[in-house]
Image (cartoon, rainbow, N blue to C red; front, side):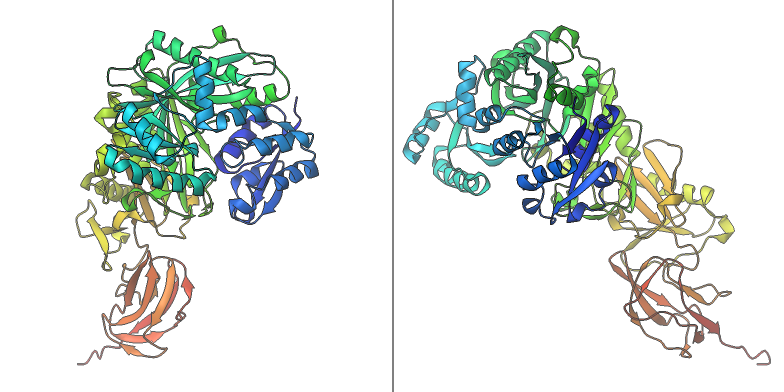
Length: 640
């Protein structure tokens, strides 16, 4: 058995592999770039080796550095995780030639499945059903156009070396073919260094069905049943589940055995996935499920298979790589219940799903379900790598129970100020189409803006925030009245006078507050709340809204008549100071401007008086409740 393992990856998959290695008594070595010097996977390993600058091309994609790190630390084996070098046959071969154990398939197996056209030809020979199409060497426009006519429109142009949706175009009519081909070839050349394409019949009601397979060096190959990955956005998986809803036993047996034949055709060892496209216009039928490609590595969505089978696929990988046979025979494997996985990304659905980077000031993921993550509170989401924060996986006796459990987990989790797709995931799970398993790979695109989360909380959520603040924070008579800066929303508390909380539009969190004080409060209805000294977080339908309550004074920075101290209502930067020590000011006069929450906040005098104790300076950073100056009230002539 391997005794020391280097993980040639980062983030959640590196942490997930370490978890199993630790349980097996295997020492772990992490590799990290500049950006990941303080990352969770770097901190979690027994040893960590720096391999270069932040860009992946200068660190995680440099195989020689990774092999050198293994040798330097005495690691016997390298696990590539997924992405980066996991399906790079040259890297796998270099690892083996360096005298190390490669935790993955043989380089020859990777190469055999690396090009889609060659892989399809091999599958045809193995009796695996493939999508009707063209795989020929003649790549001329004339030949490809003619073949597209034979197949019948719409057709799909795919780069033979493609992946991740790159080098792929759907063509609906003959007059669009030439332009689509040129665009596809150009993208394929830029992404993969190979502009060759193949053609496939476009499936009008497609579902993405894939089968987990596993082989060993003793000639054994088993399947661990199927997954449904039909919920996709721009060809990227969003929510995955196992088993596939609507799959009858006869169809399951046929498609899973076809996957086993596919793996045997390339003498496969380790974990792999055979991906199929299903024409679901008449439900799932074996004669309408076609081979697409093989992923010669562990998949992002492998946890749903682990949950329904009780198998630790990483443990199997490490045992098989050490020369052991597969731990279970096919007849010993069975399906237990249903599992669904949602990929939580640092991205903003309201801005076209653009990545959202920065510090995770607030980070709480509900522990009711399995969570695979590579970050903790106060970690950074880097702009250099894939912005996935975590995978949240629910497992229950039925599909509907797993679905509602996952929705509950999303509604009880919150991340801020980094934006996430949590509300979008909740909307997908809540949709009638998902609830009824009436899905195709085009569902998200067709649903469009209907799946985007609300930009503002409901009145019920606002009431929940107010009630939480009143009951768990301060006595009512101590609460401040609030004057709102421009651009903030005011929500009245459930009280007898006009007391308020403040929330920035779309719920952006004030930075710099202490999460150590945050604790979960009992759930009520669809909401979940958490409280710190100055904030209440309410999640609604998966979306987190942060309400900010000034601890003393009001949001404009003016003080009460009994207290002339001008306090910073929130952490920020002083961008203007309008007064000097000793200046006479009048009630409402602007004293200075604080920039916080990406907006400017004017701090004003609460009454007529004299400025004393001025500590604020232009350009200075201040913390919440810092005394910026004091206004001494003007003396009133009692005899007048």
